[in-house]
Amino acid sequence: MRSSPRSLSIFFPSTPKLLQSSAPPLRTYLGICRKWRGIALSTPALWRGITLPLSNGKRCDQKFRLLEIWLQRSGSCLLSIHMDLDVDPDDIGMHFGGDANPNLAATWDLFTHAIAAHSARWEYLHLYSFTRPFPSVTAPLPFLRALTMGSVKPIVNGAPDTDSLAQALHAAPRLQNITVAFWREHCISLYPWSQLTRFTGDSILPHLCVDILTRAHNLTYCDMFVCAHLAHEMIQTSQNVTHRKLSSFILRGYLPGGMPWKLLDVLTLPALRKFEIGERFLPGDRIGLLKSFISRSRCNIQELYMPFFNEPFLESCRLALPTVSIVDGSLDSGNPWSIPGDEAKENSDADSDSEFDGP
Image (cartoon, rainbow, N blue to C red):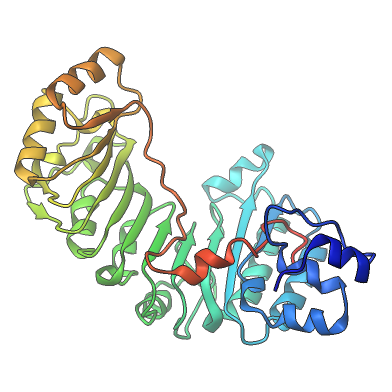
């Protein structure tokens, strides 16, 4: 429902001024009258923008009280929650499993426990922490569409519990979009790979790239940050993979010095249109490797993103691949929560508010 700023200023003098260019957020209507407040609170779009930055314990008591109120007032509406545990540089020990700020860790656990109690209403969920565990979830997740998670080891009675999380995620029939930081090898069994259309993974061991692409055969977008610190982690693979739906692929990462990873030799991607690749993944004859990969895949690459390559090499690529747009930069990942065809989510973006003060 929209009313002109002039009409609102006449009938509701205390209403905040509204911009002409866009519809006001639903939250604006909460302070007009009880009836309008009831309408706004019962509108699903209002609950698709709950954001909770937990920055070094600031205002956490107030934020938790508001979170409880929001979860209660949202009734049966689906929830989209975005919560980050921001860590001060002085607390960098937490990044590596330390307890530099135990109060912050306890705060995270308190918030995630409250959020997990409403897991049956999750639709878009972003819970990001370097070291704190993902909350234990045992109930099905019938409405979950997109998930971003940092640590992937939920803790139950002091011990890692991945079985219950795997069971819950495999009981999420609408889940198509997953972003995972701090990847561990046991994660491969957590996710319902065959139903995913979008995957972003950080700190993936090189030999798991092929395994993921083999399992996730419906992906249209994949962003892999491959990370290996030791030579023995650079397990080469001879398994050939043909992925027929992947149209956007980002392949980058950190590899031990002098240890190239020959992944393109085993990949065939006929649907590929946008491709970003790091220099460590192009050992030896770089242009020859690219041409061989494109020829084998029989793909029509429209944009090839090559960040951090020198300009003379990029010019050589433009001459060797005249039909491909060579870009000195990174592929824009867009909205990681976007699901193709999910118009309801897209339409609600104009009505949701990303700031903390919330509904």
